[in-house]
Image: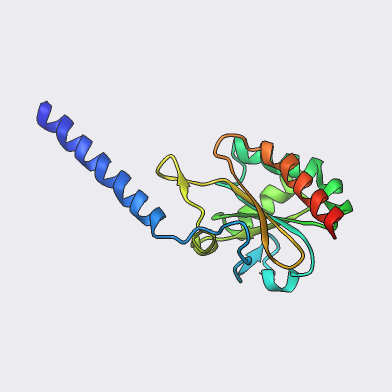
Length: 179
């Protein structure tokens, strides 16, 4: 029995370490960095290129999975506050590893008025350096990007799916006052 417990502990530890090593090998995007160039498909199957949106402020948020409780709260809060983002001429873009079809169902089910991008291979998540949370779940991170494509704010929240939306609006408001 002791040998089985020891083996289980070793296996779990090795899995944990492999995830940590994979996460640590990513370069993490920081405030002041330029948003990395990427291209993904949106919920309608259309190609989306971030470079074509430089000139507008953006809120790019990474979330774990469509139609899960925390992600529904987060998406619906963005939806409910969407007019405030529009007043600031800011785009809202959600990214997860779900496919186009899943995003389309998610959009329609909750009447989401913003772009959802399918990062099915987690390439953009890695490009931004968004780490996993609790070893295996994709992280929840929000980036506020100014008109020049520079990251102005990063909020990493594993459990407070709605908290960062107000903070994002405050940052966008302060950017508008500066310009």
